[in-house]
Length: 165
Image 1: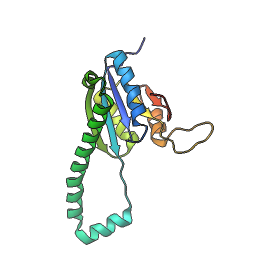
Image 2 (image 1 turned 120 degrees about the horizontal axis):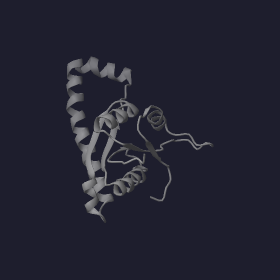
Image 3 (image 1 turned 180 degrees about the vertical axis):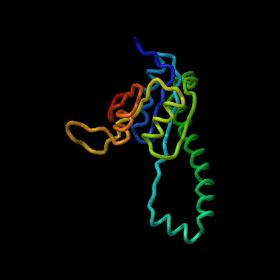
């Protein structure tokens, strides 16, 4: 059976490689008349000593309120940046913006959130970049990409770290 991709999840770390990853997702979406969801995951940073100190000084409830309040602001801003990025990339083909079905920003473990979003959206394909920081031979994938590849139940396209896209 030949796969038909109707829903593509384009996971981005908002790095310099985001453009290449998005271009690969867009090429496939054009070929299959598919929808693209663009996802960014905010990773949890838990410097426990700092959190404990701030919590002690301002109170645990106030810290939790601030986290919730600012998390919403940050997520809104990132969604705006993702949408501006997509519009900018599609300046020459604004009709392709219709293929972008949504922008999602989640908080947590990137690999877990990518897999959860793919399942929730009914994605047929995950497009993710190779974000390894090391130059080794043979090349190893970034930690998030490796986890997504090993646990995904659907095909994963890994966009190389350097392409002419």
